Length: 183
Image 1 (cartoon, rainbow, N blue to C red):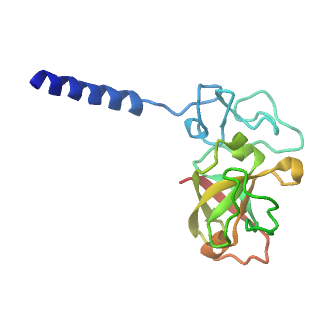
Image 2 (tube, rainbow, N blue to C red):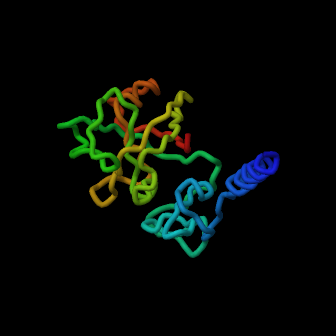
Image 3 (cartoon, rainbow, N blue to C red):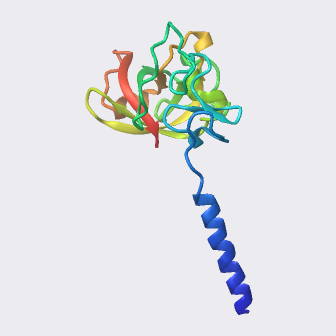
């Protein structure tokens, strides 16, 4: 019986070591999900990289002339919070892409701009949003893409009314500067 306990203990130790040794990947490093990449990098075809639509700036190789280079990663990403109604008949259009559901205005949900949405790899993840003007923060669930092909601007976190209320923001403003990070 003691040999079985020893084998089980070694299995737990080895499993813990292997799962805790995952490092955050740098530019072009291997990745499986968005959370495997450093800062503002995203996982594209198994490698951490910049936004392919904007051009490479953190990883080198030039930048798009129409979009300024991304700022260095500080753990928080600057963006613009916009207002969206995710309920049926609301300005969000159809159901959310991640779960094919409509969401009540009391839910703290967001749609991320195309590059941050990262092909759906952010679906269901929680992010923390901080209002720059008052420092209040709130967590929100990613449920949709704010598609740049359909007119959404880069660097947008499209939030529900519940997010605006939790942050103490005036919805009449429509656009406010924020920072966001993984929760």
